[in-house]
Length: 217
Image (cartoon, rainbow, N blue to C red; front, side):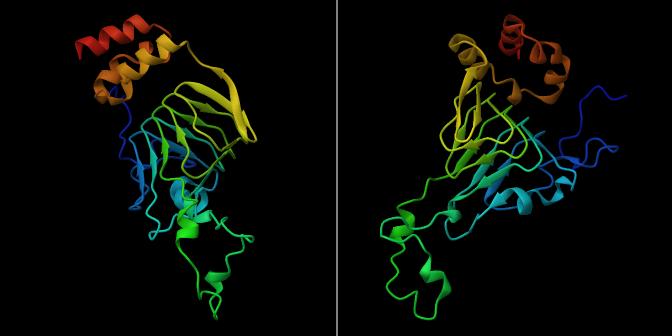
């Protein structure tokens, strides 16, 4: 049995579980970036992640979905991108212009641009529970956990646990000093063989061991 860890470029790292797939080799979209070892779990198969999970991502708006390394994304998670927004500067939010036939006359694109929230950024080692929704322009910090069926409308701090609709802070996973140390160590950026040799420290709770590895890498 290999002790080098799974191949991050293999779409299906567990042959007996085709519902789980590494997204980096599966997603080919100019506005989506996914880090190594991030996986999506879906009984329908992970191959249609973009179609099923990323909504309203339009080239003319140029916003991006950036997901870090070693993230776990549950079934039915949805990333709502900026193209879902309607103009809110006037009395009606109805998108008259998209139907044409004269309704496009006088439309001011800046009324849409005023509501754009920017890129959606998911950090490293983030766990997003099934059927959660991440709204446009939200940033989620490293090590965060989003509870199942949550609707995330605001930034989530590193190593914060949030849940609900709208998602609110449940608790911090660790104290501020530990969070700062973990972000500085950034084990997800280590070479795969270094991660493999130090799994006990990564999945354990020995910060001193992680620091020692980081300092000697």
